[in-house]
Image (cartoon, rainbow, N blue to C red; front, side, top):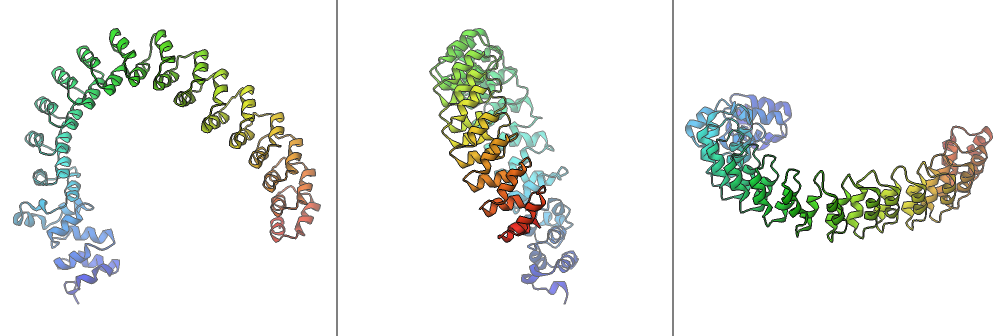
Length: 463
């Protein structure tokens, strides 16, 4: 039987070697190739994509994964003669894949420009190999996504920049607003744009002319004003106006400038909007007294803003250690270089999770470890068992702990005194004895004792 006589319905179950041979056979029929196009092996499908007898619809289906093989198909020139608009048969993702090739031929560019799917024309609009005529045509495309892609091209002539700056769609105008170089008249047009997002893009430009700043300072959109307020090159009167704006986000943004007058900081500290006070809490030039006052702020947002800093004085950390939010207290408990007063406050925290975090701190000290070793919550006591530099007296307390999990944790400590090892070797809990049995420093008599343990797992651990 020849490959041309194979039933196409059975081709997907051919072995890989047989399928590769069939797909590479010059006499393979369209039906056979259609069946092989669904083969699970990519090498088979790649051969189908290059075969001159593969039907046009199948080539379109294979183009997304095998664009180069499809373009190199020896039968493609004949198909183009028979179907000049053959790309219209290809799915959109197939044509987009062809356009992703750096050396895509001109006929593909032309066909893509006529494709009914806007995603194809959008991909075409971003392709580097485009004639000025084709770019100009796409700048008038019915799809705003296509015009937006044109607006992002680096090689856009000034005439099209001005045309798209007046486009009906704000996304297109937004794309123009962020171009690296814009003429002054285009900047002024966009500074007066009807959409706030376009004006906000203009407000953040490094090359914004002074008259545009003044225009935007009278804007009624809070996002535009906040974007403008973050600039460091504003005229003094504009900065003063924005610092007292009716919108809290604008006043907060004004505080993000590199340098602001002292009276701004004073006013921000008592501002009614917590967003403004949060912006103040993030400034790097606040003194210890102001940070301490902000740590007592009634707003959770302000407290969370302070957590972003690594220069808080003790007077500011202390109120945060007593914050109503558990995660804030946990954050403080895990911070480095806590003052003794902060540690003492956290030792009394009502949540055992905070005390557990404290228990493993290397700087807690023997006295605090001794207190936590008698904590009412076993997880806290277990945390002490994992701490560094635990005094022998505290280890003895943990060895006698009523919770087996605590005793199991202390049983694995490398610094456990021999007397406590012997005590735990006779523990009523099988798990404790198992932990002891796994130690490498067991005295021989303890090893013998555990080797005769009633629990098989303990005996096996000794072995």
